[in-house]
Image (cartoon, rainbow, N blue to C red; front, side, top):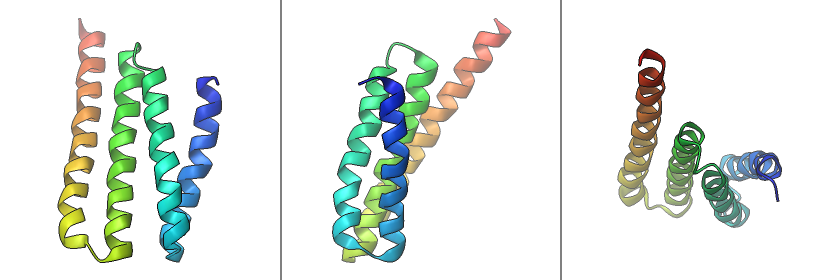
Length: 110
C-alpha cells in the first residue's frame, strides 16, 4: 500500500478514536487506539529516508501514543500513572519536532 493510502486511513481512524474517547465508548476507543498507533508508525517507517518527513511523522507517533495513554488512564481510572507517561510522550514529540525545526533552519542558513 502506498504512503498516501495509509495517511488517508489514518486520519479517520484517529478521529474515530478521539470521538470514542469523547463519548466514553471504552471498548471501541481502546480498540481503535491500536491500529491508529500502528498505522502512525507505518507512516513514519515509510518516510524514514527523508529526515524532515520522518521527524514530523515520529513526532505524530509520540503524540498519538501520548493521547492514547491519556485516554486509557481516563477510561480506567489510572490517571495517576498515565498522565506522567503521557507528559513524557508529548514532551518527546515536541522535542522531536524542535529537532526538525532546527535542522530545517540550519539547512536554509548553510
